[in-house]
Amino acid sequence: MTRLHDEDADDPRHPEEHIAPVPRISVQAFCETEQTLKAVTAAGQDRRLAKAHLTARDGGLAAAIEVYESMPTPNVIVIESDGTRDILEGLDDLAGVCDPGTRVVVIGNPNDTAPYRELVRRGVNDYVVGPVETLDVVRSICSLFSASEAIITGRVIAVVGAKGGVGASTVAHNLAWTIARDLALDSVVIDLDLAFGTAGLDYNQDPVQGIANAVLSQDRPDTALMERLLAKCTERLSLLAAPATLDRVYDFGAEAFDAVFDTLRMTTPCIVLDVPHQWSGWTRRALVNADDIVIVAEPDLANLRNTKNMLSVLKAARPNDRPPLYCLNQVGMHKRAEIEVKAFAKTMESQPIAVIPFDSKLFSTAANNGQMIAEVSKTHRTTLLFQNMANRLAGRGEVKKPKRSLLEPLLKKLKGRSSRNSAPHRKAS
Picture (cartoon, helix red, strand yellow):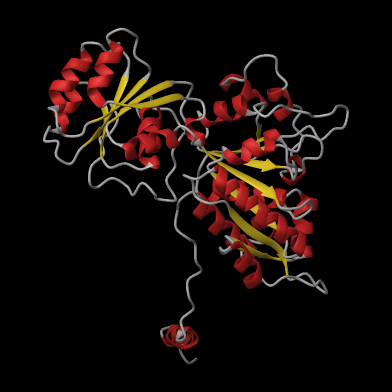
């Protein structure tokens, strides 16, 4: 039985909330008000209900009872109560025509007086007090499957470059490594650049199998297959590597990677997608269906245009999600004319999640040694930037260096003097 919503429930527009997608199900909604009908219809277009077949009509409880007297019930029924009829009596009548296993969501009215336990006794799986927004409907339906069946539903973070060569793969790999190490979350990096992927090099791995074996398999990938294909990078980080060979052309349909992502979601709390810079059916689908998107850009005109276009398209395709994020990389390159960060942010109408400074020695050393930035320099400011990005994308707080007190030098001097005074004196001979 899923939780019932009440006045203490999270804000439905909370940007950090993670709502897992549903499997292939059928959902039928019976609404009393135009607002609810519009909210349910819009929910059917949300990415998390992409696999659901959702239909909505008016009529409320009375219409639902009439319909199911002559036809089987779907996986989920959404019922709106307008408060004019005894909701418990109506639910008793609905139970008489409802098939076993059907889950029921009730959108209630503030005038409803039925206690929660009575609703639960009548088989209600979730209760939401109206009026509802689109995200309320999405959350309620999705929670039926993520909570009641105790499935680990991993968060997917997609990282893509606004232009080729901007360091998006480096950002993705360091981000995943930081999430696994500093946040202690079991994580998987999927290198989706099958021809030229660099994840294997960055993690100093040379796996024989990887993402190509999963996506080109004749059978649907299952958990056992994915476990065999994953290469262990650290205790909590695994890699689904790209073959990085040119012996074939890697053309895929839009849904080619869906089964791989769905399988890993069931076992892995965090999945980081290293998405290549190309615009195709499957890359667009991978970005739209991710829980969070990070666009990596350099501060020049082409990146400015591409980032703006990508933010606009992806935001429109995900109206109920947090807007895509972006970070600026390789900022401050010597003798290069750059667009100022303030001007870049003004055009995007949002601030970057991070501004990563150009440091050729640090990044080239890490790349050539197969190391992460934090392994090369634990105290470098870029290491802190990746920690902040990891915390924000995982819904944690920002990591900040402790501020240095103005009295610190004086306190240090007094402490040193105190330790000298307390030291045992040598006796005169």
